[in-house]
Amino acid sequence: MDSKSTDRLQRYAYDEYTVVVNFETFEDVLAYQQEFNGELVEVGFLDGSDNPMPDDSAQLLANKRTFSVSLPPEYSVIYSDDERFQEYSQEALVALKKLDNDMAPEDILADQNIATGDRIIILKDGELNTVSTRERIKYLMRGNVYELAVKVQNT
Image 1: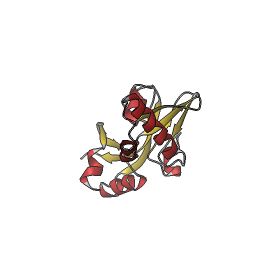
Image 2: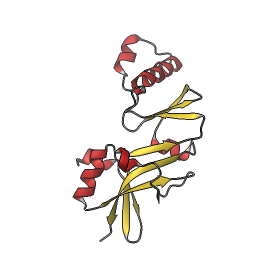
Image 3: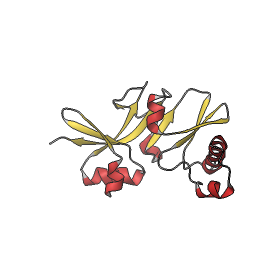
Image 4: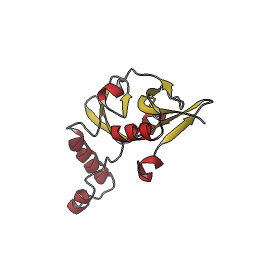
């Protein structure tokens, strides 16, 4: 893994091991696991908690995903691999440009990829609500965030 990929990682140290999360791609998780001789585990940040707990209810490993989000039923989550993602990100970009009073077509074309990295589009009752990140969902929206992690023994 390159340093750009490892800079984003978050580590949670316990007495005997460290849990590493916030991988961008499934391939990054596998590369890190192999490089550090770790164990793939699924964890959840539940009920606003900042500490990951073992939780495989999102079936991340089986679905080859690095994370998943659970919000109240009125919300829907659109991930970057969803075919509707670009459509909604364009809608979000236009809404932001209107708020900023910056609707020049060349500016919209220059900013087409509003949702880079692990940003997630949230719909509420079928309407665009926000573009968010894992951290914002954990702390501000009181959602549950599930992540594929690597558990590495402390030496």
